[in-house]
Length: 248
Length: 249
Image (tube, rainbow over all chains, first blue to last red; front, side, top):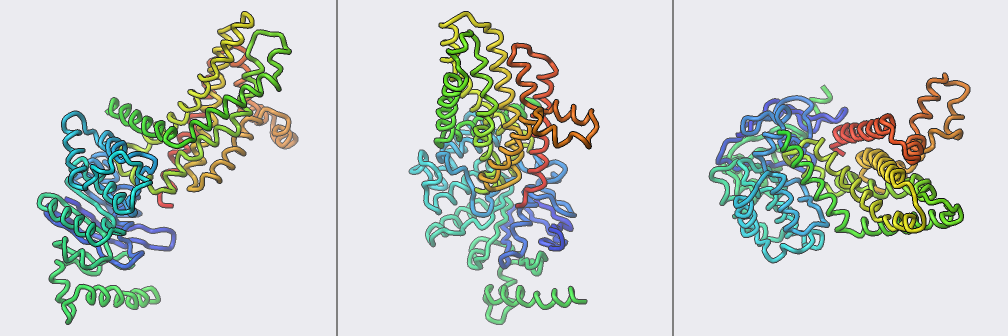
């Protein structure tokens, strides 16, 4: 369970995230939608405890991320934007390092590593140095490190960015396969992805939540029934409204 | 909880130490250190000409070698994590920032320590040629290792402040230079005339060279050890604070 209440992040005069509240329950795959710079990544960084909120709280699996960061971080897997990893390490060494930090030992460590290596098709590149891998493989290594401890909560920042259509399809299958008992939050600006894997969509722009519904309900908002039109209608429509609010 | 902390520091240390050797950095560092240390000892230091069986000409040049070599070792510690974005990965793992700061710092210090250990042929040479005071030599090694540790702690802090390794290097060299020199007239003159005497004494006592000098003479005074421990602790605390403040950049 993720509980977010009145979360805000301000950088000086700029408000990146503005009083955002929502809960995510087990079994939900939440698609976090919004134009670039809408506050998606900033929100995810606060959920995972990388950034401290200016105000508001985030609780993950019942642990306050600010007050009990280690407990909260232990039950989360996180793929940061751009899937960063230590380029000079081999895939195997990197995944072993992550599983060590995650406290996996013995038989469980071995079986978890085997599982993520098989799931993400990394067996052929295990001994390769990460910086020599293609973008698609690097993204998969990033996903593997997020999954290695079989976390209850998965936060994936643009998990399919830079992948080719086949790889995108594979990652979506992977997310769908895991979604039954987990909480998954993915950010994206690819709308077809939301349709494909999410059972809930939140549209955020200028740091505020503008819509929070199932993708199907959301699509019905536009006469065309297309998510894309709804997205444009909501996010572009919001701008003048906010400008007015600032001027007033 | 306590044993967990040590475990995490150890895991982070191991990764960082290995990554020094995954790139040519550690190797280049060790080779250059050994070459320059030898050069300074035998040519500039007049090791043979002095006709004394000790390693004073060897240790005397260490702080000056370290002035450029330690910043090269420390500059990547955090700047690289920032640049590649792995800092976000690291800081969202179930570890405390402290464990990361200490584990990474110790890895850099271990590389420096390894380079220092590999100077053992100099020690064999002096024992072959004469009958040196090996206790004093051991003290010299300890002192040299502590100077390296102090400079690396300064470097870790400046590395945490930027994503650019070159900037980290240059700023660290300048800061280290100030710390090495603060016992010298060059720095003290800047304070003379306006600062009260206790301040001048305090600045003078900040110098690495003063403390290194007394250890290298063979006297390991608890105050000198305390000095280095304090310097390292203060700069590592500063590292943790800088990291926390500048996480978002």
